[in-house]
Image 1 (tube, protein in one colour):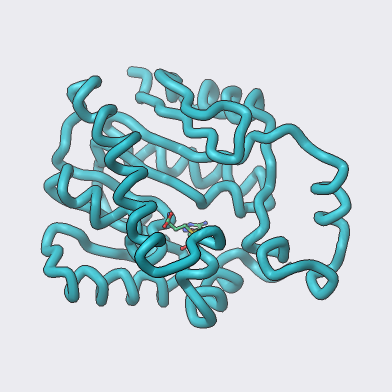
Image 2 (cartoon, protein in one colour):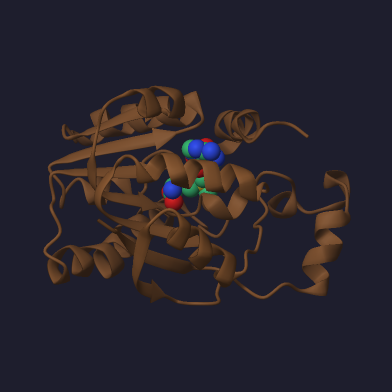
Length: 222
Ligand SMILES: C[S@@+](CC[C@H](N)C(=O)[O-])C[C@H]1O[C@@H](n2cnc3c(N)ncnc32)[C@H](O)[C@@H]1O
């Protein structure tokens, strides 16, 4: 099995926008989705919890769909992605839009820099990672970069027979959006809660529980 980084680099070169949001029918909708998600979910959290707004990390940022709206709330945005082409495209977008307070870095350079984020935002990323051990590892490392809050997305729909069949089929027998790398892997909400507990992140709110858009709003436990 190819590594996720290689798969996403291929996706980024082939058709980044499609793979980032297979449900966005147009470029306009794609960017609107990012605006709407930040306005509807993130903005109220920053206000209701009096969150610091100096630094946000957009983990698995793609080409910056959420990073740019986040740049209107936070003083500094750090977009992080495993794919160098995604990072490159996000930088180009930032320049084209005149967004000066967002910078984009690859995974390796992010984890080697010293930085603490008031808020870590991670949408539409963990759902594509097949290995639970890899998610655990990423979250443990991300936890070390937090000095406040995080918002993490998982697909927690109950398992289904159809999903099991799809997981067993080879890529060539599946439509593009169900192939390895882009398909969504469902997790039990319990195992996600357990992991947050283990890494000392307290769950403050859960949005759209037991759905494909289950978000956990967490805060570091002192
Ligand atoms: C479906 S896209 C979502 C992009 C962005 N969060 C958005 O919602 O527009 C998933 C992104 O996560 C990135 N990604 C996948 N695995 C990653 C990992 N282990 N670390 C960092 N980024 C990763 C991919 O390269 C891709 O840009």
